[in-house]
Amino acid sequence: MDWMPLLSTLTGAAIGIAATLIADRSRWRREEARHALEVRRAVYTAYACALKDAGEEIRAVALGDHLSGSARDAAVREAFRGTGLHTAGEQLWLVGPPLVVAAGNEAFHSLRRMRDAYAGGVAVGSAEDRAFIRQRRTAMAEMRRRMREDLGIGPLGIE
Image (cartoon, rainbow, N blue to C red; front, side, top):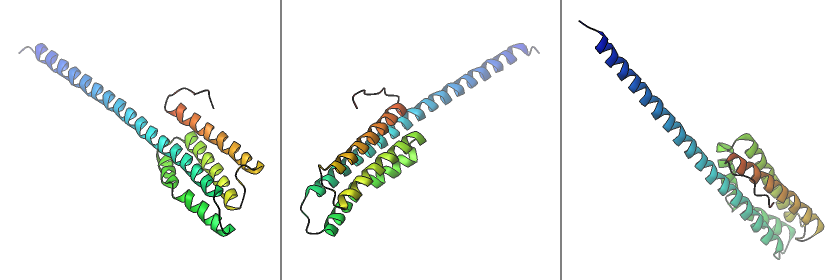
């Protein structure tokens, strides 16, 4: 019996199966990478928006009239908690790479310092407030830069 045709057929089938498996694995990896990118994009957007919302909320509360310092403190802290920032932050910690998480954490802490200042009675528009705003803007710009870099998006050049 001549084994050559049978071996050729088996070798061809093995090569075909291997090529199909390699192609499928490659396609799966690309789809997983694309999905991970979309998840990070959604998390980054939610976190940046929550930071922005929290800043607007605590500023609005700080501009309001309060009967006492403790009422202002409670109102500012409640406004901060009510924005979903902590949930968005946890999502960032779960899916973000270390440099993005570190930048996001710094942006969070800059906003928290502002929150504490407003709760303590710092007036909106004061020199101290302007310093907190500069720190926050710097931290937010760095966070956005890191997020854009991770997503493969070039810098804006406007911040």
